[in-house]
Image (tube, rainbow, N blue to C red; front, top):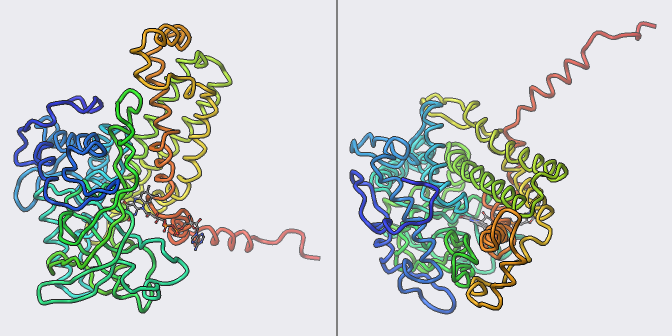
Length: 505
Ligand SMILES: Cc1cc2nc3c(=O)[nH]c(=O)nc-3n(C[C@H](O)[C@H](O)[C@H](O)COP(=O)(O)OP(=O)(O)OC[C@H]3O[C@@H](n4cnc5c(N)ncnc54)[C@H](O)[C@@H]3O)c2cc1C
């Protein structure tokens, strides 16, 4: 299977996959009555709606890649429960080799979307692998919750389910804790308990790819305090649960009506969804944390969940940066600047920044440690250091590309249709050609670069890289909590205790 190619028609055909879900099955499963609202309307069919169809097909392709027999070793491992192949994303790593295998699988999926889709099925899968690796954290709220999280993990692993998550309260009034908001049902929380489960109301941000997933994991990563118990939950909600409403932000593919003018927006807009819960019932078996602020906090930091999920995110990010570097190189070739030494220095800086990200990813593997239960934890300092600086490094990399481009991304025809007009085509072909390619090829590269960096889609990506892992001041606090300051201050103590020189008079 050609991983880096465009979405192909075979996506909609069934692939022999030993029970693995195919793209066609995935697309069919989106027709389940989920409530998605966009442009003033309820969406009837996500898989065929013009705002979402291209991205749905890109995601379906990931299912087919994993189901392809020749990708079995790369993309799957054997379920200890069923003996069937299941996505590697759900593997709990026990060795450094396991972790590397998970990265290779993540990279394979990331390459199929050029790193432009962050919440592919392997992201939240990593969190659940982390929960199932240390269920005792959930048992602190009652053994039944630990059992629930393990059972649910096994179910989603063995049936190849796609989860997204909404784990941040809405930005209504950040100056007040959850329970002091002007209305107790603004933030998503429990409003009622029944014999069969709990009922939730309120809102939560921001389920990227929520409308494309099978379940949304709803919990809270923002610090909660005494009094916030109603908001301290961890529950899995099927995307079509009655009362669950998804409000995507502006869908970029709506205007990206052809893949020449918008080669990326038309295919890879993963769509961030605001989540509203209107008395959504969640059965007990899908409840893993219930009104417990301590467990709600510990799920992220006392299990390897946050590390596994963000290790996948860094694999995806590294892939995207490779693609970005390739785009910059092709752009320079088109403008004839590629051999200019000053341009090569700028490209050298870009490549240095990309290499730092890549090597911090590899360092998470090599400095990973094994806990007392035999579970491998990627290095916290390696992960959080690069995440903390990503916000700044990403901006610098984009700035270099803008610098290198001059007007190249702007001096392009208004639309693909211009090539069809005989009067326009003559001028375009003459004046917009490159020294190494005809006008159509040159413009194709520039449109792709603009879609990457300057379109609404590209601009959202800049915001995504800043915030997908939380605001950078919070990530820096993670580094602060995990850095070995004792070793650093120990050296200072040692230096202060060195035998004195010249003080004996
Ligand atoms: C494109 C995109 C996709 C996302 N996808 C998901 C997703 O799939 N699932 C999900 O759950 N969430 C997702 N998020 C949400 C993301 O997790 C939050 O945006 C992030 O946690 C930041 O929270 P916030 O937006 O409420 O910002 P705030 O917490 O309000 O912070 C905004 C800014 O205010 C300043 N600030 C606020 N408080 C402090 C402080 N104490 N000290 C210093 N500065 C401060 C900082 O400059 C900070 O960057 C996504 C966000 C974006 C932009």
